Image (tube, rainbow, N blue to C red):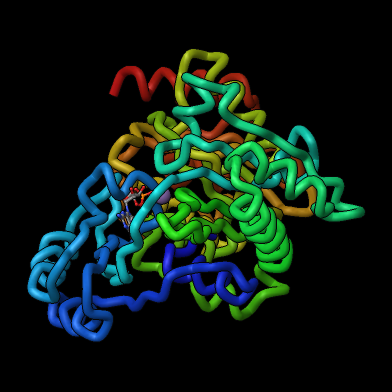
Length: 378
Ligand code: GDP
Ligand code: MN
């Protein structure tokens, strides 16, 4: 789950990190009023689940409340990487002497949290990794011991020369690790971590992604979810209990079981097609789930064909077939649908589907080839 910068900053503050104050506005009036209470120069910052806001014109300095209002007017409603800005953060502007990058993420290869830090902050870390990988210092944390003090110093040492600043940065890095761990985050990032001309270290940007599997432990974090800021399909899939990942192809896939869903996507690729999504309806033949799945798949304008691949074990194929028929009765679908079912009660399922006018298969190879063919011909 993604959260906004202002929410991530609150998590950072609770961990004791030096983060400037800030307040959220949803209208230019509010932005102006907040700027007035701070006095002096403020920054007006788009709150969307995306980086690169600065480059997109979503981060603006304002030296007067009137200017803050004008920036809020321009930024609210703006689109950044396909996401509409509904809120801005108004925060006192800091004087910046240097910008560094500090991030920690769950590294699947290392199977442990891994820090990346760089003195080249303020820019995309992916860009630094591609053009100047030596400018990044990495450290994998042994989760049994956590981040040890000398490791925090070793990371901070890659960023600064001044011992007083290194000491502050090491503290921030240790606090970031605590925040990351206690929030059940998969990623926590400060970009930039700045120094001020007075030699103070501060986090002026914050990005945190919470691991969805940690949310049951953290009702207070679940409450931070902003469904207006996430793609509709993700919200719908979550509410219906579907595992869904959008992809860029045109073959909409609806499968039961994550393993079978991946195998189906592989086979689509093998036959020269391109999956539009990963979608696992789980071990259920509940028509509500099938309706939700079809709503999500058909809402994607790229989808040219819908491919069902169902393996009936405990799930009965005839239940799934009834679910599909029921779902297509409730929503009007123009896209061709091809279905493969095999396993428990498959004969009955095929009879139900053929009666309803669907092309039903029992072979996975055949149905995938058919789907790829239809997608190419459509
Ligand atoms: P991002 O582009 O989405 O990563 O948004 P950031 O919060 O990182 O802001 C982008 C850039 O705007 C930073 O790298 C800074 O250079 C600049 N910026 C942000 N806040 C301040 C501030 O308080 N003072 C100054 N002078 N610049 C700022
Ligand atoms: Mn940033």
